[in-house]
Length: 120
Image 1 (spheres, rainbow, N blue to C red):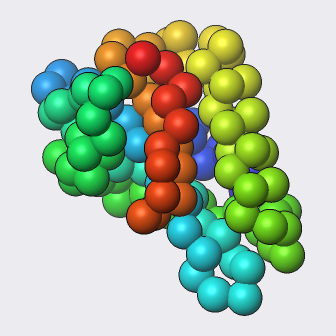
Image 2: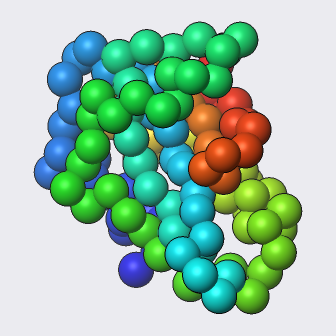
């Protein structure tokens, strides 16, 4: 499964409440450079304070996506690729026709690190 199919499933089956205004695509290393992307949503968003990204006000059932294609990549390359994927996503029709288009903010980053704002 690729990112587009994963996000389509979430868009079509797991609508968040209208209170969710921030979406965080977190990344973590599950061991041996096996990277996992996950989605959570927040009722808060503040482009000056990253704490909103820690909220789990929206957690889809299929929140995890394995980044198999980046196995054995360094974390910086993984982050750069995820940023590019999300930048392309927010330019797509899939995005514009989904609940993500109403978000005040979308970000990504590694757990415990700085976040990268994609939309704000």
